[in-house]
Image (cartoon, rainbow, N blue to C red; front, top):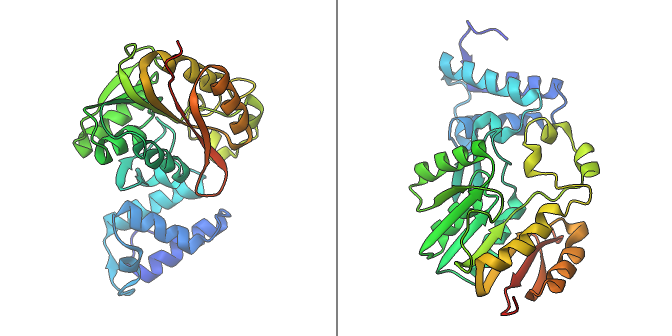
Length: 285
């Protein structure tokens, strides 16, 4: 691509679209608009208005670099460094899992049951669940736990940017949490089998941390541990909200019931798939 010739918005959009098309990216013009609008925090309509307006050289350079990365398979959220989650805009990069739209449903389900007291997001990654609950709930304290130092660094970056009252803790699942201290625990743990992870699209495997995706040969290692460990950190009557793999939701519900959880229920995500488990801690030890 030439960089010494002034380009109009229309010409640059056509150039970027052509590069994405050549890389096999679906709907290349739409994707070019998404890169442009998200990278520059502009509405797509603003990009299309006054198509003959010339684009500054620095902007042309930035957009070409971003589209080159996108054409190479890098996720859009990493290319732009931004991802929307509910009403938040968060930093997103290789340090943590990219928040998915279906995960947003966990926030609604938990807030419908508990909005106050002390809560923890276990396996917080970049902090999307903890930050959303801190923003939308009325909790006295929100904790965010992760074993990954890079993920916690991303969560801290997001916490500072939002000015959120969230305390970050490093540790393995519930290890940093005190017994009988919480009214709610939310988690989107890794839940893919090793075989499922091996068959993932390279756009996921290459760019997102495996530790946030795969959980043993049956995909249940982290989930079963959470069902066991959260019983000790939740107060009696406290709520657990988990994202689960839709193919193993029934198995997880059975495990929860066997461990003594009550009010165990599976809920569907926005695509109609069995995605969430809600359960309440009983008085049974």
